[in-house]
Amino acid sequence: MMSFDSLLSETEIEAVSYFVHEAFITNKQKNTRYHTEENGWFNHERYKIAFPFVTGEIALDVAWEELTDEQKSGKRLYLNSCISCHDRSKVEEEGAIWEGYPLSWPRNGYSHKSTERKLPEKIDGLSQASPYALHEKEDDYHPKNREEREGQIIFQKNCAFCHAPDGTGKNWIGQFIEPHPKNFTIVPISELYTWDGLKERIQNGVVGTAMPAWRYVLSDQEIESVVAYMWGKFNNI
Image (cartoon, rainbow, N blue to C red; front, side, top):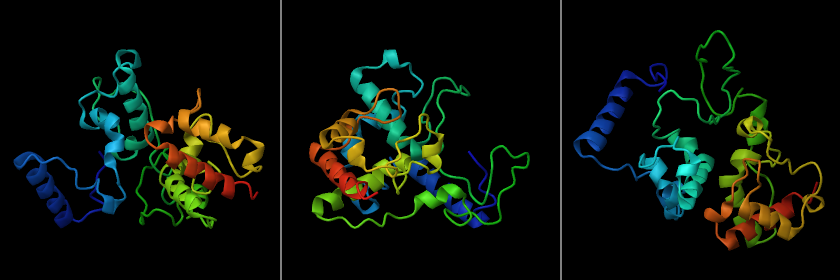
């Protein structure tokens, strides 16, 4: 938990404290208001298998071999989606280094390797962020049809976390993953995969990499739309 003293005023900190006390201590409400369609969380139930790791019902550092197949799928989904906001969730062994994931790119040239951990005067998402910000720009591809448009939305809301919005995989998170996510901008994607081959990789994931099996999250039609979008965008290299 970082210090928010340099980011929030005393009044704002007081307001947050009041909300947390009322919502989670006095009224003991579950914080579900964020996961609404208005916030982009349509069909939130599709993440259901990851819920036990979000709520802490299952500790995140439970050994893989102790989990059922469904729980393993839920943990993979949590690590590839939910963790960006929910952090590590509950663990059984505090302080243990189990798995680390970067959540964003450095602001204003900040480096965790620096001996002086001073906060920059200005904190934001893009200006002076770092070279990684170059690959976080909004996608400028114009879909040819509705299927490609649907695939573009899904790609940018899911795949872009690792592959970057521009498909290079050279964003902050992508550069920390080993092996790096595939760069789709070097050669036409049809030279890398067949249509069905690309769909299979998205559906079932890639062994030995961080590429998950999206069949646990996306429908067959949604995956087909992603393939259509990638086929249209990344064949124009």
